Length: 499
Ligand SMILES: Cc1cc2nc3c(=O)[nH]c(=O)nc-3n(C[C@H](O)[C@H](O)[C@H](O)COP(=O)(O)OP(=O)(O)OC[C@H]3O[C@@H](n4cnc5c(N)ncnc54)[C@H](O)[C@@H]3O)c2cc1C
Image 1 (cartoon, protein in one colour):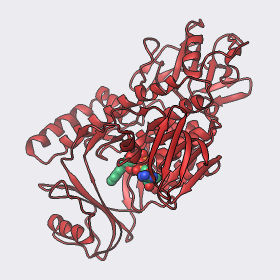
Image 2 (tube, rainbow, N blue to C red):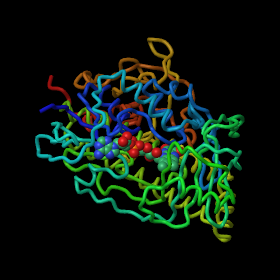
Image 3 (cartoon, helix red, strand yellow):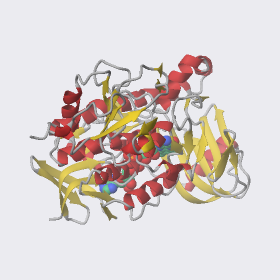
Image 4 (cartoon, rainbow, N blue to C red):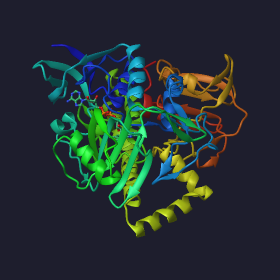
């Protein structure tokens, strides 16, 4: 039987990112993907938020995305734009880039790493015991894995087969989404009426000064709120035509659909992200309305949280209990995303009183403090893992500082490209001896004279040392002392090697 240390069900954005992280950490990883190629019919996610761009920057691949997309202020809450251009990050913006391009670029990166991809196959089930997981495939064969990661989307077979509950809220709205050709030029932009929110836009566009500028002709992206929730049949061109006429009074001569689908605001989250040797990430672990553009971003960041932990457990440098920190850290992040999307859907409901409430919220969000807080939240820059009391940096993203080192000027994110833990000593050179972890943790003496500033929080006291996890979050902060460092190293990177 073919064996891999980790098998990932699903090669969408989450599965690809996880595979990349595991391969970087030297883990034998394979993806099982239903699609025969990375081609994605339709558009789905329209871009990346700032923290996801940072996460790609931590691996040295941000430029691949930035060179193809449109930088723009994309963060918002229930239609109120939230500007992050004054945020202390190298990427104080989001990126307009369709999901098919995001996946192609991610797959290109994964293709440069030792990752096996089995295409045109479904994971149909699995059986696990304390030694591994037998992953059943649609061609009747079985793969043996140490661990199975379900990155197989909202209808996850892995989640169901694991018997993990998916509690939440049923849909209250349903929308048709499609890409079609039209013989007439449609009314572009967003329309809100008694039937709901609808939008027509060109698939090819550019962003100039924060404004979307469409090309003439070409494919039209259509989004139409349906009359009723709960349709089960696949939507057709006739459904789309009927709804277009109901909303716009014309079908604009639509024809030749590339893709027609449906999305809802069903909101659910897996009760557990781990069951033994089986883990869930991305849409397999959480689904919600696309409003706010959080899904892909959350999935990619799930993968970056899980990858290095799973790699250490596979390599047996850390105990299996490290995997429980994945649920502990990422479940609350997605739970908040779910709440935020529910609030936004509620605020966008068509009702005069809700309209007034939305205006009120919008007014509040235009004030500086609320704007900063919500902008940090929607862009993912404020994520805080609860690692206990201490310096404000603890459990937060490490800023991408320009360090002065013996090797010259270096950015912190450059030092994270290999996805290895990093101890930066900003005090007396050579002050730290972490020999028992030297096989796992890089140590860098550096100087940094600038300000330490965190999004939404503002300036924080300069530490004399920081221990940074491979996902870019701060695991320990030093202030003239080594107190707690050995514990943090043991917690996150395993017990000290025997002398
Ligand atoms: C209209 C719309 C707009 C959106 N806009 C945004 C946005 O602006 N920003 C944002 O961040 N998110 C957005 N999203 C959400 C985003 O598309 C998803 O969150 C994202 O695709 C999740 O990635 P994933 O890899 O977890 O799951 P998926 O993308 O669903 O990938 C799952 C993969 O698993 C494969 N698969 C499924 N079952 C099996 C199986 N049994 N065996 C093998 N392979 C399997 C599938 O073929 C697929 O490739 C939007 C979604 C929609 C519908």
